[in-house]
Amino acid sequence: MAEENDQAPEAAADAAEVEEEQQVNWWEEPIDDGPPKVDCPACAGGAPAWMATFADMATLLMAFFVLLLSFAEMSVPKYKQIAGSLKASFGVKRIVPTITIETARSILVDDFSPAVAEATVMRNVRQRSDDITHPNVVKKTEEKEADFKTKKAFRSVEQALQEEIDQGQVKVRIEDNKVVVELRDNQNSGGKSDAAVNQGTGGPISQATIDIAAKVVEVQAKLSTEVEVRKQKLASGRSKRGSENDESSNKSPGGQTNKENQDIENQYQKVRADLSKDIAKGLAAVEKVGDQIKVRLASQGSFVSGGANLQPEFQALLGRVGKSLSASKGKMRVEGHTDNVPVAYNGRFKSNWDLSAQRSASVAQFFINESGFQEKNVTVAGFADTRPIARNDSAAGRAKNRRIEIIVDGK
Image (cartoon, rainbow, N blue to C red; front, side, top):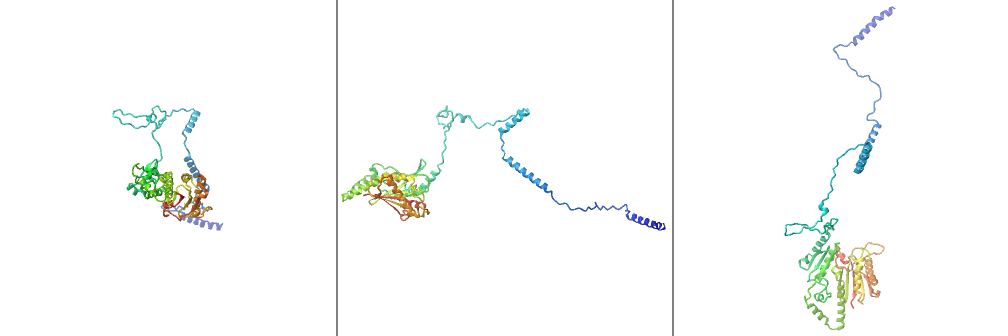
């Protein structure tokens, strides 16, 4: 009991001390230590995975819906039909004013035909109509392709023959969508001399005409438009010197030789007359070399490049040549010529020698089958590019060198 009484004052003193320490002055602010600390793991940052996936799906669905909406087409009749069905179902009737846009129709276009108003001295201007009772409007218009190619070809030919045009030798014009080169009177364009024209037969061709034809062929090889060469008719009484010279030339010693020369000349003139149109177009050329007649055929439209098969247009030309030469009883030699461009290797032709020989053989076979020539009188030869008549450094020169020459003995 005595010990308990001794401890009581000490406990009271300690309690008073603690109370004194805890006593806060009224003029001091209390210190806020915040909420009590809780021991837990830190939360992960960002949105949950399910939320990100859902947002991506919603974005994709919205984009797909916009894409479908952009492809959709609004059908006005279908929309009106659906709207009418809804009105009938719900019993709603509403009058909506609509505006109809008139189409572009005119009474002038429906009832009248366009025509040219004719001038008159009276002050009563009227428009003439061909048939006012016609049920449909007859519009006096037409559609056609522009002739730009023809004009371009005309300018090319005119530029190539500028020197001859300035000298008055030729005249270039456009006729029926083709370019016409007309030779003047001082040119023997059809290969006829003055005397020969008066007699109605052919004659020697001048060098100027050959040069003009060569230029035309060179330009024609580069164009798709047809270029035709024509001649102007000479006056009937232009000159009689040519016929007098022909008569004097026939009066040479040796009657048999003179007769043979005359026969060759007549045959030469006949071939020129038969092929006059082809000569004017630049497709053929006829020359007399001694007692032989040489027909040179251009390569235009004759064979396919690198081939030896005759084209239909070339067959028609060969038919005319064969018909003109069928009366000849002399030997015929068909020569093939090419340019210096190597042939593409194939199983049929290994070089230009093979190609030129096969082309001449094709022409000879055509004459035998179609024109009635005998095989014993026909020979073929291929010279490749060994006998050029022009330089091979240009497309025009190579086109001239690609040719077929038919040589017939006049005797």
